[in-house]
View (cartoon, rainbow, N blue to C red):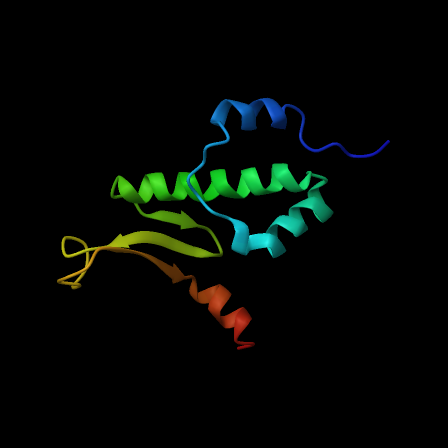
Length: 105
């Protein structure tokens, strides 16, 4: 029997709507991995990625830091949070362990 993805994934994605304002067109390599390794359709994988980044963005806009173990932290750089005195922008800080693995240290 062929794997059809997670049970109930279509209902969950439908409940979140298709109008996700996150563009994942530049993340085809990740989308293709979700298709290959998880059995999702291409459309499901794109919607899952959009929801993933939409949730991260929502937390960041509420002033929270999103920490993903083993990967890094997403946060908003602004005058109230950092020494940045002029701009407000999203920032990602890679975990030291991942940085070491990527740099073969």
